[in-house]
View 1 (cartoon, rainbow, N blue to C red):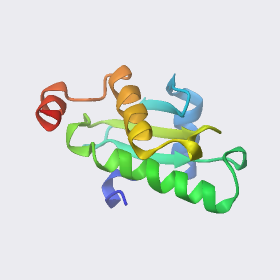
View 2 (tube, rainbow, N blue to C red):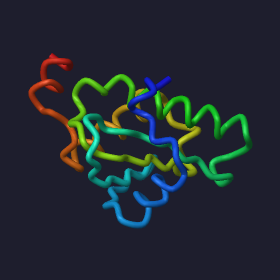
View 3 (cartoon, helix red, strand yellow):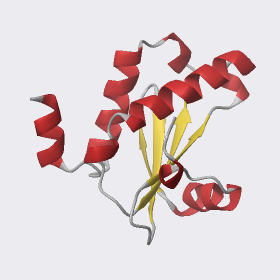
View 4 (cartoon, rainbow, N blue to C red):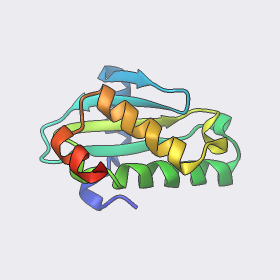
Length: 121
C-alpha cells in the first residue's frame, strides 16, 4: 500500500490530472501527469470495468500501487500522477507490470536517474 502522503485521493484532483495532464501510453497502462506544488509526488490508480470483474480490478490496482511503491525513492517530487489500467493488464506478470511502470515514469522524466541506477546496480 502506498503511504498516505503519496496518495492522490480526492476525485476532483484526479479529474484535474485527467483533463489538464500530459499522457504517456504503454500496452499495459496509461500514465497521466500534472505538476503540483506538493513536496512529494502523489498517485492514483484507475481500473475500469473493461479490465474485468471486481476481483480482477482490485488485484490490478493493488499490483499497480505496489509497482509504484517500490520506486518511490527514485521518483521526483512535485507531480500528481494517475495510472490507468488497460484491458491486457490482468494477464501480465508482475515483472512486466513493473517494467511498464518504470518505462512510463522514465518517458515522463519523473525518475531521478542517479537513484534509479543505484537501485538497479
